[in-house]
Image: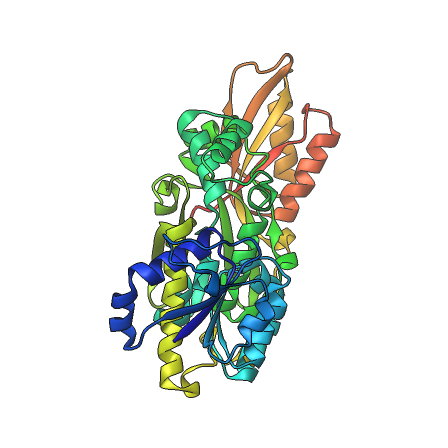
Length: 432
């Protein structure tokens, strides 16, 4: 089996290392050698330590994917173009493809999966969600016989690392972000991660696999962690919760909830114990119940391990013949249907609320009265001592309510001028 590699950055270098280090092991598992026959990369230079010679390197990626001596194309360029065009070109040339490109698959997955099916070739994308955590293959194969009700995932290691630092060291957001950047866990421009978009891309793929619907990133309600404060971390702990950036999908009789946002989860829940840059996904299924998948969600070798697993899987199917390919999502693509998205206004949650209430008699009762008139009842209230100048921090936890009721109530509270700033709310997922 002959492999062409598109992109030899951090993950690509890891793939080269594993192909070289485990050459004999991979040959034994496959019954045939896996040979790297070309690498397309504009800045790559020969590297004797990795075994990369000048003969392997090319700047012409299009020509590489069409070479007759290539069986499998591994796309690690990232982004939309030229990755999309090269993958489609590889399909037309009869090549199988492995990719870690979650943004591309989230935005153009339907086109790519259908093109692979028409060409009768395979596409592997295990590394696109969760790094080395084998959740894609698990949903596609091991859990294929069950009906899934919900998916809750910590799928961005950068955000989880920042929230871990805030929780364990007491840093504020900007300090925790700077620490993540120093450690190489956050990019110089971290917006894709900290604004929740990376998690939304990954959630699109999980929804396709778990529920059999096509979901676009624009259909995912997406919030980041930039507004989570140290005060929220402390109050959450006092209430028995941890704050995590969760990617959440639920199937409510065909209406799909798809949302990414900071979420309070019970400290006793396994997801609450996931620290630093690790990822974890909890799948709730009808017959099996709750299952949990945990591991390193990013980095060179965890992601490269997932890429190699896909290469092996596709190589086995290639050896078995075309009849063994053509189900990239684990079901016929004709069964893939458009998602019917439940509006966020219809989502039902418990909520954490934080008010900077004016320090005068009757304010607490006025807030509770507005909430009550909007059908929102309270589980608990925490009122601390005097805060900044003339305000008092008031923390409330609600029973379940529709989000439209909460938004309407908070708007009314703000217009009554009984609070100094816009109220803060964080959704609570108590039953995972």
